[in-house]
Each structure stands twice: as structure tokens, then as C-alpha cells.
Length: 65
Image (cartoon, rainbow, N blue to C red; front, side, top):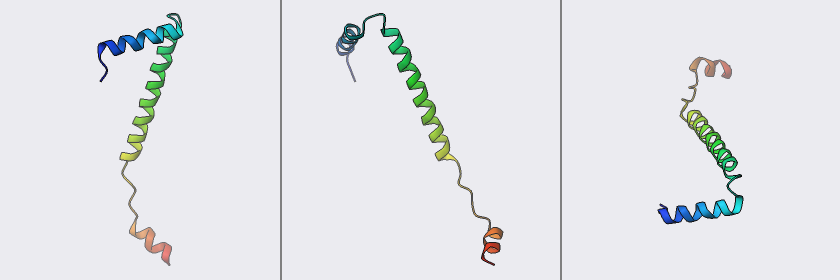
């Protein structure tokens, strides 16, 4: 985990690189990207947890005839 000094240093470098006017736009983009990632992750988890359909014995014997 990062400490307070490391976070302050990273924040300072980001402000120097992008400027304080561009920072809100970057954070907005980062937030929307995280939201999309969580939505996709949730969709995949839902798809994986769905029960698989079982084969019907009647359909299986009818297709062999």
C-alpha cells in the first residue's frame, strides 16, 4: 500500500505533467473507465454463474432414432 508521501509525490507529478485545468477531465475519464470495467466484470460474473441447461432424455432418444 502506498503511504501519504508517495501519494503526494504522485499527485504533484501528475499536476506538473498535465496542469490543474486538465486534471478534472482526466479524473472524469478515469472514473467512467472504472465504471465500465466494473460493469463488464459484473456481466462476466453473472454469465459464469448461470446454471448450464441439462439435456432432456426424451430429446436425446428421439435424435438417435
